[in-house]
Image: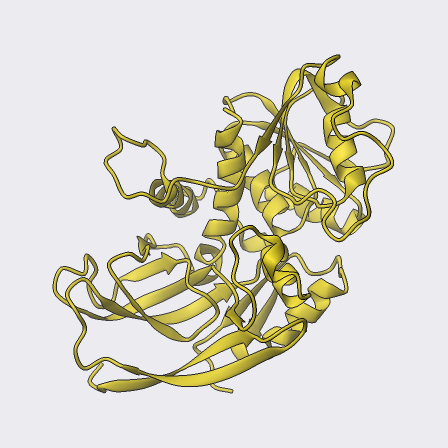
Length: 336
């Protein structure tokens, strides 16, 4: 790139449903040491956090900013310019947790993870959504060969199904829609069923809860085996009244000796593997490596591919709880 200044486009939320696509200019004339300019190819929609922000519930996530705010956190792009000691070179394909925007300057504190050759930008943009599932498994000390049940089959739940299968689990997928069962089977579930079936698995080692409803929480603690674990990625009770049951009923937490884990966080500190073996960077590298070897394929989960200027369509489908929407990706390489 030779231009000193470039115009970029970015999605911003100013309140519930108030999604705007704005333009601003970036000065590339003097990248500081450690900085790089990345041109976005694809960003992915998270039907959990992103949808909550779109619906006006931004601050329900502890520490999250209020409006106006950027939206999105799953970005696959290409390095176009790199300053001294940036750690990347022009032409490198990278995943970052940057929002929905067409380009950005990455600083020394920003995470850029190399996308291996052979992994398309669309699938790579889903890496962090899969990483949330990995964090849920690691937080609850998952061991290869255990039975894992995923309750809630949005994009994060479906990515968790695929990842748990790739990591050696016997995977059950539980949904409230038959449309999602087909997607779960495509993702690699050994068993898939509806939440009201009588033949649900009832002796699960580790349940990963990605849904937000109280009935989904109750189902999770009911199907976990004695001394089993429930790893909670969802927000139980989000936008719902208080439940009509005791979430810590002794029948579950005394009688069955269950363990609950709050999940989704991976250490972000950059360090040697000897200090923290699997931090956020190495989790993402592992997921992208699984993709490159064909052991993890999230392409079948992508139901909607839209140019950036039509992203509102996907948000509105998500807000309407469309079961036809599993994963949506936005292409920033297209003109309006």
